[in-house]
Length: 288
Length: 289
Image 1 (cartoon, each protein chain N blue to C red):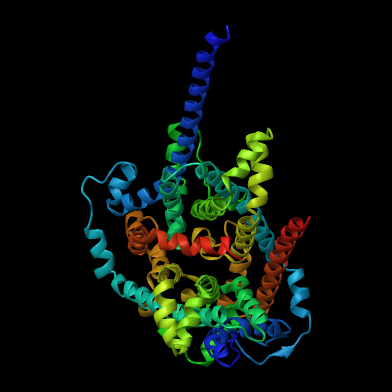
Image 2 (image 1 turned 90 degrees about the vertical axis):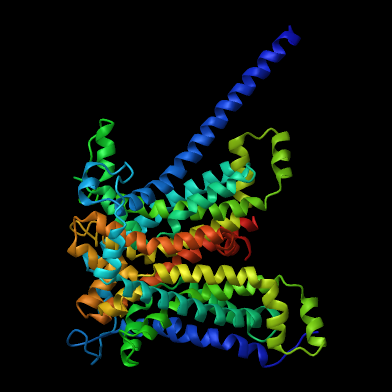
């Protein structure tokens, strides 16, 4: 009896496992679909004419309208906005990364009076938002004559990511074996030499992660540029997009084209450097 | 050898000075501004009004409504993307390399600027030509004017936020799960724990750090968010989706009432700090038990 029942039991066990596995895969794939479908629609709409878009939003474009892109960039003058985005993101990325690396070195390598408190002070910056500091920052920029300038956009933007940067660099640098640093110091290395020849090579992936994330944040930033850059020639892409919405309310093909122009550089960057992104973002949750 | 000298201060000085100028001074300045008012918009002839701005705020129905919407947003964001992220991460944790592929794809919406996401979803939600209503009608359901209906607009916009956020949560929880040793699960299995029990008594307690991080990050993000709602609805219809960020922008940049807006900023800062401290302390004390 038992011997006979055994195989049947195993078979039903196996088939229930198969069903379970199918359900799990279906759920996982459903969320792949949810993540990508709006992005598919965005690219699809960007390459269609308005008329074709009205007929069907799902089908691939019959005659891809690549000229939409040159229309937006050249004739509508969005090339300048793309250039402004580049300046804003690159500058605030460099500023944040350099200051964070220096502070991370100070916090991770040295022991000093008030270290805990100063580190905690830096961390409270994580809880501060653009909306909390808007008015004083705006008035400060006004007093310095920096409203509607590149510097005015870049300086406060870099501050927003700085807390994250100092935190990330400090935790990464702490993982570097102290013996390596001490050896370099005994050999007569100065701080900057230790930083350049010991820390930087070992922490290159971490610094890379930080730079990429800061670049993305600045590229996608909206609130400060909206308030600080009110002249069209200075607006980055993320703000110029809004300007388009009012004028072409129902021209979804044009609006989709501008969103694709804003999104594509970050998408490419992310696809090339996923691991760096993931490493930087997950680090905060793991170490504390 | 412990070295003790001026040099560490030189290294951290740029960061501290930078944060002092652009973060700490503005926070304190907003606090000071909240006790003053000015005779006309945008003027800086401040006069002392004590708690005047605060009493006005407490009677400002629109502000209270916006604060309520922010709190609702926190709850929605925990209920949908955070819980979803946790469940997906648990499902994925048993898999080998494919889990990284899934996590990478789930994270893609997070790289889409909030402005872009709002624009794309405004089209998806469009009652007459939007894909969502077309799809619903194709399967026999009736569409709705998602962003024009006061009763559902906040949830509809939160869906956009959830869309871009769940992948972030998956990534954090997956990283947290990697640190849990499989032997713990085996031990629990031998003790007769079912899947649900293993989840509640092994996974959740050991994910404490990741959960704290995600909850605090969600609270901060939900209290301060602006871009998404500004582009998706600008607080409408009939202020049914207004949030504190929009009120601050409106009163300062449109009306020039800087002191009133600074009072809102101060309250926002206090609420964010208070909520974060509550979550952190709650979880830290539980750990002590």
